[in-house]
Image 1 (cartoon, chains in turn red, blue):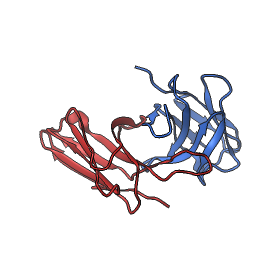
Image 2 (cartoon, rainbow over the protein chains, first blue to last red):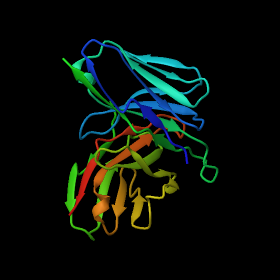
Image 3 (cartoon, rainbow over the protein chains, first blue to last red):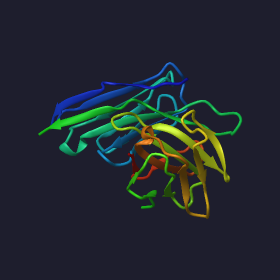
Image 4 (spheres, rainbow over the protein chains, first blue to last red):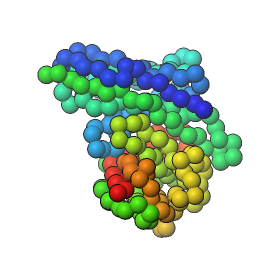
Length: 116
Length: 113
């Protein structure tokens, strides 16, 4: 089945540093979503990407949909302590012909810790 | 800003008991989902629901699970006879369309003892 691999699994950075994480797959995805999850809470949508090559920003966050449609990256500039959390990518895969719907598959997550 | 809500926030139940987890999706959304996240692991798809029927379900969503939209606002997940391994966070999500972004609720932590 389709799988998403995120890297790095975890990272410690100093406040003010830039952060980069990515999501890769052997399968093609039609849409990429990036979520942030704080402990004990639900994932919060950060950025949605719909076209190959698309580069989208949301404040200090920038994400790109890879041209091959098999990867995506998320950058966080000038990190602050509240950026701590787990970042998940989610890819919308192939059409389910029986239902006419698509299914999102989540990556394994990148745990970010910011040192003040 | 509209949001997905879930109740209860935490449910403790004994093995073999039935539980119903409740969700109120965003009001103009048409597609509804349940996901599960075992502690420390990734979010796993359980089921999607559209037009009052299941669109797709994963291998996790076996005969012990069912979903229902009993009225115009609620969306429920029932686990008929809970097992210890059902302990997890359960997230409801909704989207305006099948290709649109999904918005998640805060989750229900289910603990089966």
